Length: 138
Image 1: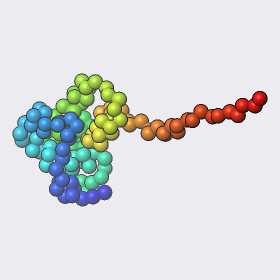
Image 2: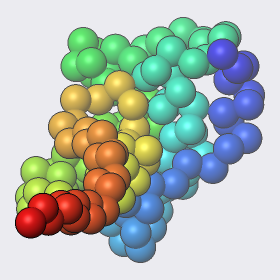
Image 3: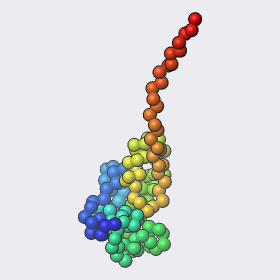
Image 4: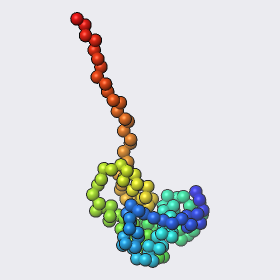
């Protein structure tokens, strides 16, 4: 667990769902700035990684869980961000690429109910089988 200031110093990015940036992905300029500035904190809050959450931080968790209406601009921006991510993931065809699934899982904002296929366990390498030579008996 780290203090909330640690997360506020980090810039939030989601290159999987917003490869061209938040502005071109459907968020307004202000919403994009809010998500970039406070997204790392919100993401950390959803996985209970913040050691000193404020009452506003706890309220955003209620908003994400649909237990309260968004009251601040960051809450509204985050809800819009989540709705865009869910819509994109629902419309995207399922791909079986382990690399892309692993990247998507790593970039996924935690605490939301977005279904991403878990990367399959790495299969063991098959050893090269050499044909056994049988001794011929005459």
